[in-house]
Length: 241
Image 1 (tube, helix red, strand yellow):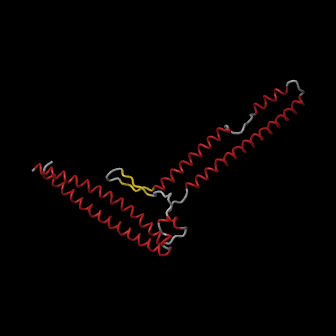
Image 2 (cartoon, helix red, strand yellow):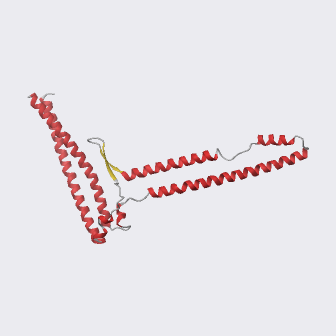
Image 3 (cartoon, helix red, strand yellow):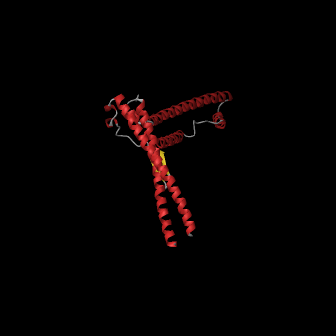
């Protein structure tokens, strides 16, 4: 690369670097301002509720992070909603459990209630006609049909009862699991059901500050890359001279 090309690329790099420095300072100022406002809101909440009611003693030791950061590259830093991902995974797991339960019930109950076709009925009636008078045959056929219908009705009712009991048994743990997984993880509930407005405002300010922290990390990573590139270009320019 010629010296003119190196100088032009250096100028572009320096201009981009200065623009990123401005963005870095702006993000830093936003973080500082929001964290300061959040602490002021917490002070107001302590004044309203009492210092002992808004302290580390109210923390739930089972707490888990609701936000996460995924770094896939220098420019790909994403703020993740871990709670939403957990809810989606729980929903998919529940749907899979319901599908397996339905498949198991279908395999246990067969394809459905036992149905006797007209052809099988005629075959049985034809067998019973042998060696019997015509009038007796018709009466026996009617009696056999009524017995078959009674048996079918009993089998259908028994199959329906088994299916209902299986559904109730499988629904009970599913509902309990769903209720357990849908527990509200909002940290504000650690301090009571009806929390003061300043405490809720503090939560919102800190959550917005997390987004600025991710943006700050992305800008910082890009600045480091530019510094390395500028250093390499300066060495290349010196060698060419």
